[in-house]
Image: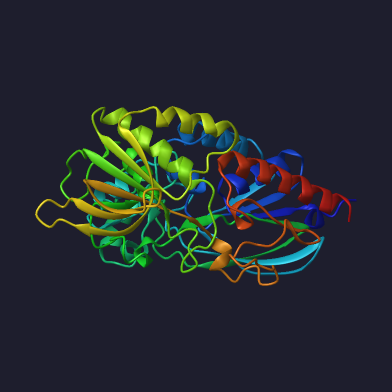
Length: 420
């Protein structure tokens, strides 16, 4: 008789890598537990407007994966959950997971009555704080699980009772508490992904001080139809359409004082976002300031095509400083032209900082036994027998590479539990 526990697999991280690993392992007949710290699955990809290589919206691919999850009883999803500890060995991993209260149970029908009754607002985490939402909210239109969330500030306030009373289905539980779950599994896939490097640490580039300096992840949300501006790329300072936009590559990346490595995807992300601008504003001017452009393999043609656009200027130079022209909110970029050896002052309406991918493993102590490299990535795919790192936990990857790595990790995990 097969021991179900020793044949089961834990996947930590519900982004594209973790989603892929969990679904593939479950469809191969394994019992799978998928742990995600956000209230929804999909990770950073869910926040994209479009992604390579087809420049399609992420919801099409995510919806297919969510249907696969719904149809598979072997895949158990835990959201708002994080691993507190993991110990053991191949075939016998002991894992403790902490689940934060959602304050909304499975009876939720997404009717929105709780949000209608709520007056309290919070910064919208899905849009990187660029707009406000009700403190009773659906994370985004295609969220999985499709269920509302109450911000703790609402659940603990006097208004929380009014919100609870507004729910006709008894889905609001204001007394929900954090809880711990203990699992014993046969193998672990660690796919905790990445976070955008903190642009506020780049003190010469004006992020946080000047409203018209934003980051590349914020630009994705500005461009998305379900973003803070309904998909219109507008200047945060005044809501006006920008006539000139600068994309600043390696903002904090390849820099010994910040992220010493290349994240590999930032050049293509900025070029993709330049096409967003050109599609909305045919007369807009775009500058892309770069150290060197890294467009590999089949993406080289995308770069070549964009260079033909007379309104897009590729400027080989490093932006040393950004200052703001007070009356207009415009930005003045001090740029060294590394080809001509000259210093240039260039005026733009907006600037987008291409910040790099910082692995979550560089700021989290879990798993404590996994050796990190100099940049905070887990140093190898197989950390120890039965424990596998995948996706951006071990290297910067794009979406298609994340899917491939998730599939590889699932295969390794299955082999691990079968060959005990």
